[in-house]
Length: 129
Image 1 (cartoon, rainbow, N blue to C red):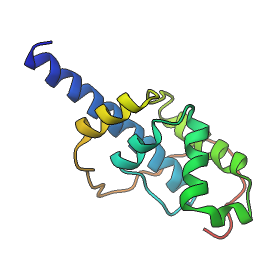
Image 2 (image 1 turned 90 degrees about the vertical axis):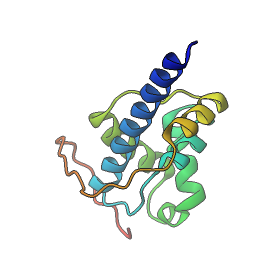
Image 3 (image 1 turned 180 degrees about the vertical axis):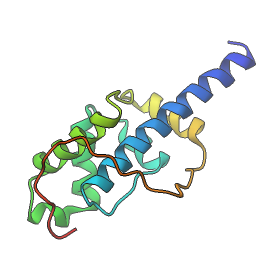
């Protein structure tokens, strides 16, 4: 690959990571969850096979208190449904992809406004969040 091809690849990968982050963070917001992912979080989870398994691993590691009221399966499925309604593509799995995405994403970009979207999916309110 020549340098311009590397730049195009990095740019496309960065755009993909940002689209994934926007979709996940919008899903969290819609469900009233008080956490946000950045590029480092997303890429660290990319080594786990399957989006639902990635979400479950994150909840178990960082928000286990939610499991007092909801099952990991219920929460991960609710998040994934909201995320997929906004952006159905899945970030590639694997350590190599995680390293590339982390390199391409650089510093996480701050979001200055929240996006509120409604997809007509009725889910019970999440208590205790």
